Every structure is written in C-alpha cells, then in structure tokens.
Length: 285
Image 1 (cartoon, rainbow, N blue to C red):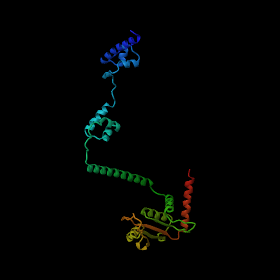
Image 2: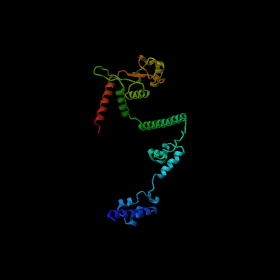
Image 3: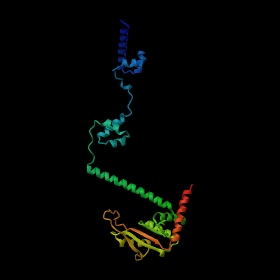
Image 4: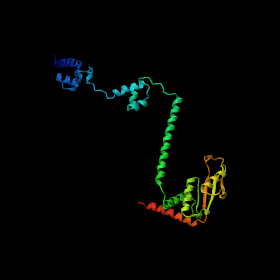
C-alpha cells in the first residue's frame, strides 16, 4: 500500500468515526477532543454534509420577533402598526411576512379620508392652541411699559411706518398711516407721551373705492375717539381691472392717516432719537 493510499484510508476511517460521533449529537469541539484532530480545516472536512445537532445552534434573537410579526400580520395589522408595536425595521417585517396574504383594508376610501381629515383637524387645533399659548406668555411677559420704553417703541414704529424727511423733499412733520388698529392705538399713546393735544390731530381714511367707505370712517372715528364728521375727506384708491384684490373681506377698513399740525420740532426730535437708538445699539457690547 502506497503512502497516499494509506493517508486516504486514514482519512476515511477518521471520517467514519467523526460522522458517527456527529450523529450521536457531539459538537465539533467534542469530536476534536475525542479523535485528537486539532486542525480545524480537517475537522470540518471530516463532518462535511452532516448537520450540527440542534443543541449546538445559537438561538436567534429575532426568532420571537419574527413569530410575533407573523402573528400580527395574520390578524390584519399593517407594516406601520407592526413596526410601532415591535420596534423593528419595516424591511425586516417585510421579509418575515411576505409569504402571508395581504390583509383586507380596515376602512373604505371614504372612511379613510374622513379619518385623515379628522386627524388633520385635531393637529391644526393643537398647533393653533400652541401658537396662542406662546403669544399669551409673550404678551404677559411685557408687563408695564415705562415712559422711556414707550418713547423708544414709538420712535421705532414711526421710523418704520411714518412719512420721513428727504433731501430732495423737505417734509419735517409727523404723518403716519397704517391699517392695523393696534398700531394706530400705540401711535396715539406715543403722541400723548410727547404732549400732543388731540386738537392738533387730523384724521383721514385711505381706502379702495369699491369698499364701504362710510363704514370704514365710522370704525376709525370710534377707534380714535372723534366725531366722524371731523374726519377729512377720504382718499379713494382707484381700481385697476388687471389687479386681483385680496383685501375684499368684510373686515377691510383701509388705512387711517394721522397728521400732527405744527410738528416740525417734534419730527426733528423723533429723527434725532432714532439715530440715538441706532448708535446705542451699534455701541452695545
């Protein structure tokens, strides 16, 4: 017998022993120790084709999840619900249950649309409540205004919305226009702080010609506390047929123009204060 034939016979003998031990339920380590075969490559060749015993298999951590996912799918659950319930990836769920029949829809299209609309309405209501709460807390945080704070707020407001003197058009007088009643109210309070008597004020409505001019004049007169007959003649904005107006709601009341007579010095003080605010903000560390 040649050396090669001898080696082949030895391998076959070892293989018969290894297969027998494997079928008895021994692990690779036990077979290695029993046959004194410490070469891993040779050891695997000896038991090639023989499945390992069940007790040597590592438990799969996802076996329970997979079984639960299949159970829920058979109950008609969607991938999203299963994912939320089990906390595993949707791709894994898809692999586990892809052989199962797709569940029937729980709702008709009309029912589904109604549920979506109801959910959207609840979301919007919650968002609106959150917005209102934020505004309420911010409003209450202001507290009482000092004269200095009102002065600064009024100057900033006028510089943003009031008429200003230009190098090409000398106009040193206080003339203010706005459509927001709260802005007009704050502006008048600022004028009170500056000591402007109400008899020095002139009011005029600026509004689109197609609006209810009389109703707008009544609204603004009541807001500023004057008789409607004292308002100056309204300025009417002509309608451009190519323009689509969006301010056509019933609440549209145009703008109110507030003019202060004999206000050149007040204007100069206002402008000087404004640039003082700018410089202070620039120099602030």
